[in-house]
Amino acid sequence: MEARWRKEARDDLTVEQILAWADAHHKRTRKWPSVNSGAVDDAPGETWVAINQALYKGGRGLPKGSSLSKLLVEHGRK
Image (spheres, rainbow, N blue to C red):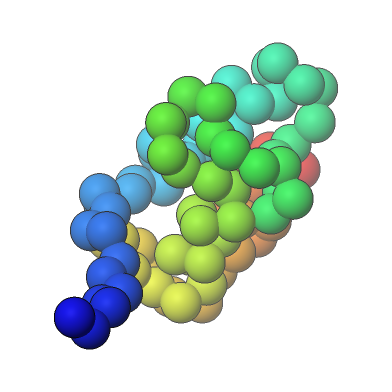
C-alpha cells in the first residue's frame, strides 16, 4: 500500500480576522505575534507561521506578497 501525503484543506483567512487574533495575542502577552509565536490561541489548529506563509505565498483567500510583520505595520499595530 502506497503512503500518500495530503494537506488538509484550510479555511480562508481575512485581514480583519488576523488582526483580531493579533490584537487578542497582544492583549494577553503585551507583544505582537511573530512567526515564532506558535499557536494562535483564539483559533484552534492555526499557527502564526501558517498565517505568515499564507500572506507571503498567497492563498487561503489572501493575496501574495505580504507577511505577518508587514500586515501589523500597515494596520498600525507595530
